[in-house]
Image 1 (cartoon, helix red, strand yellow):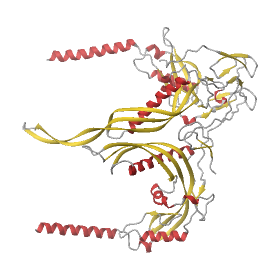
Image 2 (cartoon, rainbow over the protein chains, first blue to last red):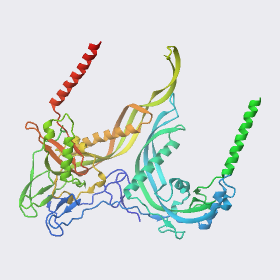
Image 3 (cartoon, chains in turn yellow, cyan):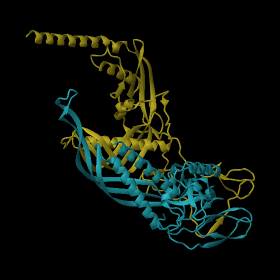
Image 4 (cartoon, chains in turn orange, brown):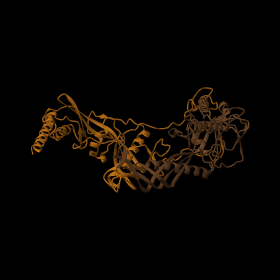
Length: 319
Length: 313
């Protein structure tokens, strides 16, 4: 279902129908127009009345001054992004419920003691949210300040150039899930299980891409720069603290898949308030969401700490 | 202000109007003509050659004649106060809208750079001063100082969207003055975009245009490196750039060209208007008299001021 037509001759990224130039390196797509072999003279004729026509600014196309008809010109294709495949749900409704109970009970002592028992599930809805998965090769030039090798200032400059490959990196295009939720459940998917049709859940909400292709590419390239900067910081820059990390990424073979990914969206009520949870549709151990804190328990601890401090101060003073 | 434009003898080609059959003589560097007998617009296609490749892309006109003329008038009215008065009063003469040939250049730029990176730090220093009672006291203050560390490295990037003129009639500086063009509106070249308008073939050699592209690319890399440097500041940035995998495509850009004849004894001034965005560019002739008067007034004012101070002492 992909609309790739050929690969760019320079950076080997796929070109798609309607691309005039490679979106990565800017190389012109192979020309589709035959070139003149001898001198020819052409008069553009109106299809309606046969009169000669000229390009008209108002219509952004040739138009006929006699019969007012407008000739069609090739318009630029910038289609809305479409999902190319669906990852199936492998976690059922019951498992999702279980995962919710398990997650609520694993949150720790500061939560209300009756959270697991009193939380009432209000809604449990399957959602296919949209994202891009990409592979690419790249050469990353970087420069940054870090604490390594610093002298009088806390910072010292470093630079380098590394080659970097990206395999199956997931970038969210979802409006329904926040970036935090996506990064919490993003590692739980098995990208090899892609299907043509939605599978594994009934009455699911199927999110659509809300971006045009050109904006989508922009967003993917920005995401790549962020990921490259993170990787450079964790693997290549000496030192432990960084600032002003700059990267220049030369991409090759950027292959992007547009896919829909499964997630369970839960809403539960505790003492009249609604809380939201998201569970990865393929692995119930990837869960994220919000939950209440127990004010009583926090107050208790704060009071204990305060009393302990008082006792210490009093002991010190008494000596 | 010519970028070494080659002098070319004007050649003509003979074509016959496809509407009425009349024989027309057309300048060899034009891609279009309008038949003087039947007013039919013709588009001429020639086999491409090394210095005259077939156009790959075109950006269509968006700004019409009236808007372009109004933009030029605004631009003249708001020009520098040192502009010649006869220039400010002159009426712009329109030569028609032209599809200007330009090259769209792209490459991979690999650079080696070196710079002195300034890293700030604060120090507490003691100093002596006199307080309000006239006593000498010692105080401390924090001062920000900068240490410079040398940094060198490699930087690689794609260069895209460098646009240089391919017409001998328009210098690259003149084209830069009305850039940028919004290249998202780029279309594959089709005769329907230029029918009825003036469209030129390239009249500069490809080598010439490559040279212009290289210069613009290196300037672009310099700006990127300026942003790329870490630290609180930097100085002595030096770099050497190698451009590889270059590509160049011919694009036709919409330009309104105006001529302003402001004095009998001076050549007319060329003013260009970006046919897509309406941006105006050109060189304003400066009045030598106005500048001289301003300098004289300045000298008199400063001189008077100095005299006034001197007489008070």
